[in-house]
Length: 228
Image 1: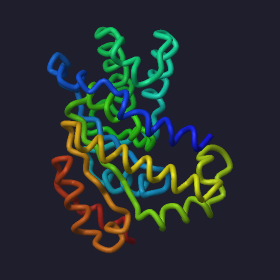
Image 2: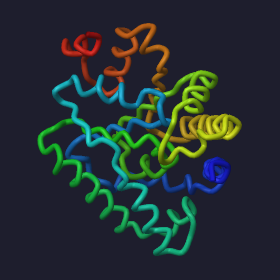
Image 3: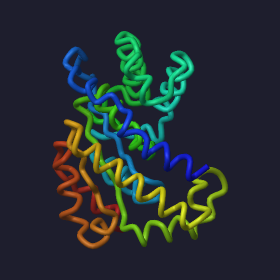
Image 4: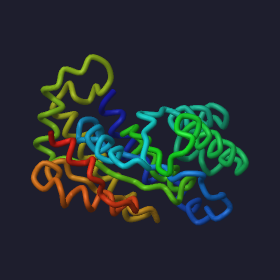
């Protein structure tokens, strides 16, 4: 199963309809700015969420599965696999999903400027996210290969993350994910902010200054509470 997922990730850049990214101007501005915290499991997504939420203008919806459910819906409706199915999707359906997603976030946090979705595996769907949310802030949490793979391998996951049960598959999954992120960074208009877990540990102040700079906010005093 883990190898199948890695192969699927490897398949995406060869089949994603990048021409769709040239037509985003018809979408209205979001009532708030989505922040997507993405990456592999356990590279610091939760810590990043906690850091950002020290700002009063930032709230989190946790790990939303709405994008994945939308993809499953259109695959079934069009009888085509993702991401090829995006090329055959009606424009009005994209707009409907965009409005549904933003309305769901706004229901949870009605008066917030920035709202986080930290479903880490959304890194697979960054092309679709770019198409829907050109103003979104993308934060990619990463960790060195050796530290990451060993950390996952020795973690006793009860459900999910099957790629962590075998060290070779963990390494394969990591390599494919990093390759896909490199392609997204080259192809997409949204700037992807790479946040290294090691940098948070070694240089907390400077790393978090660049993080808040990325979303257009200033570091706030409450951030120091995370260190206590």
